[in-house]
Length: 104
Image 1 (cartoon, rainbow, N blue to C red):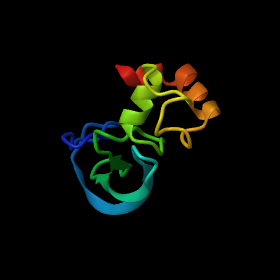
Image 2: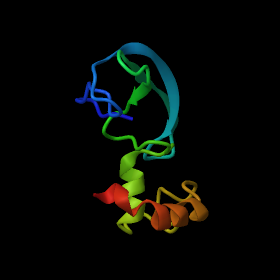
Image 3: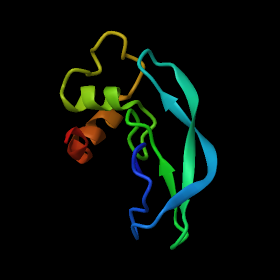
Image 4: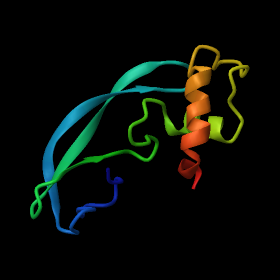
């Protein structure tokens, strides 16, 4: 995955060019699910395909970054009003044990 402003291949440092785009489901604050388009780029040298993620999305996560950060910082729990139906307690516990690096 690369960020919006990086247009060089993370693997070899060569130039990336537009390849295609894919849809990804995302859950936002308020429990609303929707789709966003993620642009995919291909390296002209090594041929690897990379996804260009917006800053408010973490790789391999379906929830917005603000929700995940809120759980990791302890602001969002299963008792927080407005968040009762998502994410589940097991998901929040998994985030706390495996994803503390996302706060950096």
